[in-house]
Amino acid sequence: MGAKYLKAKQIIAVDIQASKFPLAMELGATDVINGRETSDVVAKIKEITGGIGADFAVQKMIGKTLNCLRRSLTILPSDALNSTGMFGKTATVGVTPTGSKVSIDPLQWLLYSKSYVGVREGDSVPPEFIPKLVEMQRAGDFPVDKIVKVYDYKDFEKALHDLHEGTVVKPVIQWS
Image (cartoon, rainbow, N blue to C red):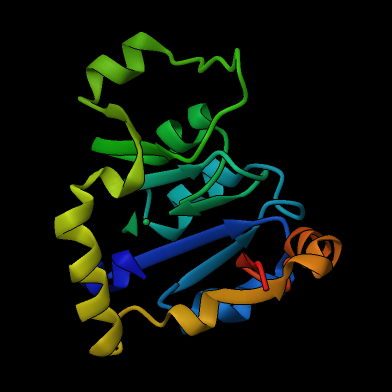
């Protein structure tokens, strides 16, 4: 949604659950890649971008998925970095397991002037960003209702199941 809001001309969504692709397309993806059915996701991204690679790749650590901005992606940090072109920027979003390591080829990183950053809380100042999200939601640019589903705390197992099955993007537990 952020890539669409920022008017990216090409947005590539990569996931291992094809059930997520219709929503990804509805929310702005121009292309989708099934990571389970594609042997080389990086090569596929390069193919889709005409050999250039993504300008931005967003690597989501929670789960085993990959989402891409362009020219936009979610995979392993090294794959996300390799999917970007010259001056490409890769961001890891979310919490990584303790002790996680990222393997980067320093020569490729240097020769192509790529950058790799970690993003926490949207890499923003919450008192400024949250009102902006509310404004975007009211304008129809941030359709929270499409990605959030509220579950009663008694249905925690169902929320977890739906998350793993890909039928919900962001389950929210409500304590009643």
